[in-house]
Length: 190
Image (cartoon, rainbow, N blue to C red; front, side):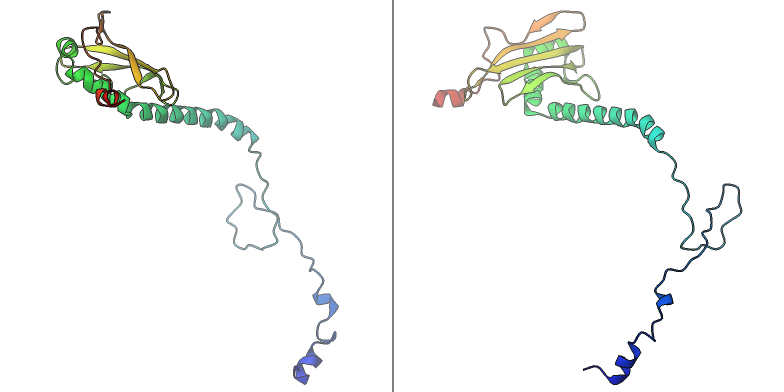
């Protein structure tokens, strides 16, 4: 049980009703541009007007969308450029006699930031890509096309070619050579 002194203090005479009523204070307007520095601030002052951001939003939306689009394309292209398919075709071009003869040594991407054109869909069995290459002797555009006919089948290379700057198109995958992309150890086991 609380002490007697507490019970006496908790009566209505200790807390007058006027103390529970909200106080009326005049609102102070926000300072206008060009006014001097605000030396005192009251917590109940009027808030400054919020400028309409609709015009700013409409101006920046196209910039935002273009940045998102360019970033998305760059991310997907980077994923293609760093894939094992591109690395394997570039390695096969480096070791190809035709590639060495026409492009020279040190065969690599033509551009500092290579752009891989085409579709690379391993899940559905469709690869059709092309990208620029260069060597010490020349430049060209390499194209690689391969499909997988059945769900669990192997990829079959349909085209592997090199188009040079002078317009000549050389078939790197000829009938006399073995497909450099064919996985012979797995096919021998099945």
